[in-house]
Structures are given as structure tokens and as C-alpha cells.
Length: 343
Image (tube, rainbow, N blue to C red):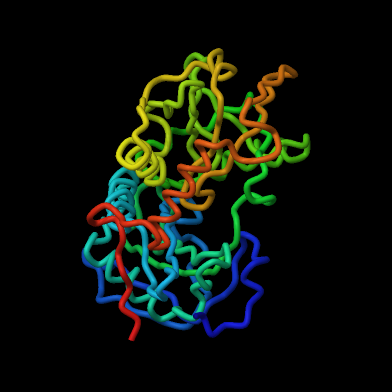
């Protein structure tokens, strides 16, 4: 049980400062030992590479308190490898994957009191990130970097919990592919901010992005992947080189096939066929699965027969099974659950 006196059941998805964060610096071609500190502020030169050319990457994962009181994380090795690929793409030094896991263990253990109680509906969110820290005025990679992880307890990503979301088909393009991971680089998430603010101003919860080449194929939203359920109970998810390789989506596909006996397809999905699906959901670390009730395509409404008021039955089974694995209620596949040793 957590010792912190927070209103766990009513947390939003926002930042709450915790006691410790992990910091490691790259200089003269090598990473230092790294360690925990209490300073939540970062002081950088005005010409730091992260400010001038947005040379930065990040990841996102969660820690959970299980029914028997253990603290666990979910597949952190995949976050480590995805961050390594993102770093390579932006000509940044790879933070060693084994040290990534050690940093996750250290920062969660140091903030164990901020891991919400089992059954509260809240979790601990971890944000590993790295950025160019030395002055860079020419267009070139930085030579010094800082890797950090902070943690914060969070509630649901989308307000309303399991109430289905309303999306719109977006006319804006994401400025660059997200295919290697959470490459922030001023090109992806920041470029989606105008689109999401515009969507919110028009009464929508999120955007559905289409492929930029033909604008006929479903890609993803600003912060999550799509899953669809066909009328005969098959899970279908978009196949594209320009969407985030979601760890949650990969896990859901496995859960659907191996735990629920469903047929699973990863393939190109045309916007024209979305109306034929029975259920739709958005999946990701922050969202887990959030149901979609309606997609509006330039005035034309696509409504899912799963119902506009609650999560569809198959999506609910997927959600319950995945969260059951994460929370320790259901036996996990080998290697999926990483227990944190809290002394």
C-alpha cells in the first residue's frame, strides 16, 4: 500500500512531482555512471542542441502495484530497444539497454510510495528521455547529452474512462514518420499539437490520421495506435512503416491470439472499410485501450455497433486480459513482467 496521501481514484493524466529522478550524462564519447537526485529542474545553455534543433527522444512506460503488493513494470526491455532505435535515427548516442533497465528499477524503487494502490485505477507513469545538452549553432548533432527518467502517478489518459471517444478524420499531415519510436525532434508530437487543439475546439477527442501519400489508409492518432474488431470477431490493426511501433498494440495482438483465441491481422486498412468494423479502440501505454464510438469524416458519421455509451464486448475482454496481466491477476507470458525490488 502506498504511503502517500493522494486521491488516487481521481487523479488525472498530469504531472505530480515525485522525490527522485534518474540522471546520466554523455561526454567525451561515454556515459557516466548515472544516479538518482532530487533536483527536478534542468539548467542548460541557451544554445543547447535540444533548443536549437530539437535533438531529443523519449519513451513512456508504467509501473503497477499488483494485488499481492508487488511493484512491477511491463516489458521495459522493449522500451529500451525502441529508445535505442530512436536515438540512432537522430544521431544520438544509444543509452545502453541494460543500464536503461537498471535506471527504471532504481527510479521506481526510490519513488515506491508514489505507485498507486492496486484497484485505484491509477498507475505510475515513467518518462525516460534524452536530449542534446551542449551549445550547437551549426546544423549538426550535439556532442554532449543527458538521459533522464522521472516518474509521476497518473489517472486515465482520456477523460471519461471507458466512455467511447469521438474522432475526426484529420486534414493535417503529421510532419514526419514516427516509425522508429518516440522521436520528438520538433517534427512529430509538437507538429500534432495544432491539429489536436483544433480538434478539441471543434468538439472531438482525437484525430484519425491518414497516410500522407494517398490519404486513403488509416494510420494512427496523435498519441495512440488503432485496433479494430470485425463483425466476426477478428482483430485488425493498421500495417504501416510510418506509425509508432506500439508495445501495447504488439502485446494486444499476442493476447488476442494466445489468450482469447482470436484471429489477428496486421494489414493496410482503407478508410472506406472502417464503417464495416464492429468495434474500434485506441491503444498505447498511456491510454491502454480507449474505445471509439464515432469517427466523423468531413460531416459523414461512422458509428460503431458496439454502442456509443460503453466499451465494446471484445475490446473489453482485450482490456481486461491485458490489464490483468499487468496487475498480476492473470499469468503473464515469460519476460513480460519485470518486478521491482523495493528494499
